[in-house]
Length: 234
Image (tube, rainbow, N blue to C red; front, side):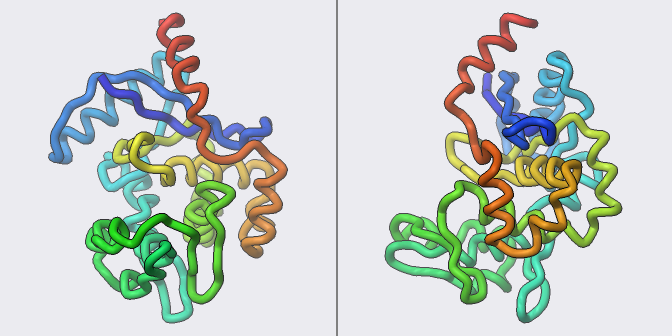
């Protein structure tokens, strides 16, 4: 068994994004078919609790929309052109003993994510994207900001995201990672629904001021309670 979250836009609430965990039978392995079995299992568990339809946001999604919204596919506009979102995020990390490693901006996305310097340079202390420094707090804010800016140009086309009850990323393991493209997508939907999207992308400062008005970021402290409630209701 494994536990994985879904991310639900809640624009009418203070949270903006609700993180809900479900237990599922895990299919081990790196093959795409195994990943897609896990997606199906997670979506089935969520549907039993009333959360349907869901959209998988990753390269393993069986829907083209979900694949196109993956951080491996999206591009962030930089001074020298467009940069894969994943490369922009990894290459902007600043550590105690190194970074930003801006050569990763032009690297293969998988090579950028697996670059050994990201593990060997000490604790993460912040981000530096094209000369602008970004802090670690609010947690996930820098990643979310990059993600939302990357898809902002497609906001009219992406109004179709409102039909989904929530979003998943089967590659996201909350015990190993903090940032999640499915959470970022859910935040995008909440900001769009609240008519805050255009203000949010004006600047980093504006984005932070908007999310500061809400309960924001990863919330795992009540995971066991959520699972117990779900288990009792099924």
